[in-house]
Amino acid sequence: IQFMLLFSCQGKLQLQKWYVSVPDREKKKITREIVRTILARKPKMCNLKIVYKRYASLYFCCAIEDQENELIALEIIHRYVELFDKYFGSVCELDIIFNFEKAYFILDEGEVQETSKKNVLKQIEQADLLQEFCMFLFYFFHLKIFSNFFDFLFDPLGI
Image (cartoon, rainbow, N blue to C red; front, top):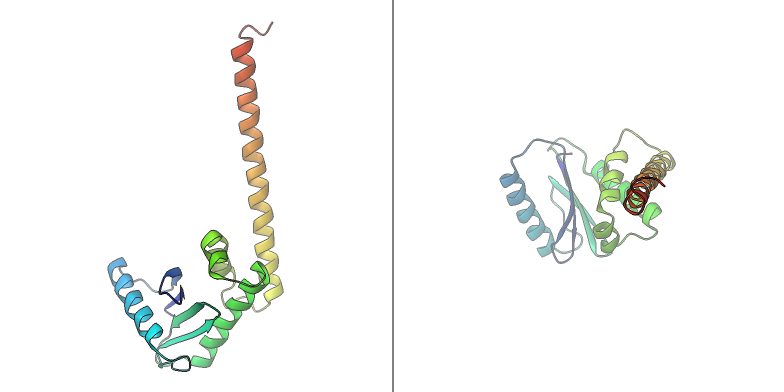
């Protein structure tokens, strides 16, 4: 797979993950052309290099090499959709917009190396717990610092 794109029916790009090195200008050009081409097609059309599937209002699209199997690419797309559905409930565009860091994490953790969706979801949940713990520590230390600062303001000599 060369890249994975996730975009809406209106053509708004929500996620992109590139597995090959491509200059940013070229990425934008490729993305624009692919989105325009796919949105203009009928639901059952697909060519050999670009594999995509529409789920609700989102298109999942990936580009593959000529010698790669299109069915495997469709299976990878379906796997990502299942992971998104399990994590977000029933995934929709707003889930991706407001939780884009989680969506990218799912793309990173859900790569083909791990075949168990259960293990991928477990890794995502562990990352969520770690993030929540880090936020707790952040707020705790900020409150402690401000508390000491206010104590100093109101009682600079500590009397």
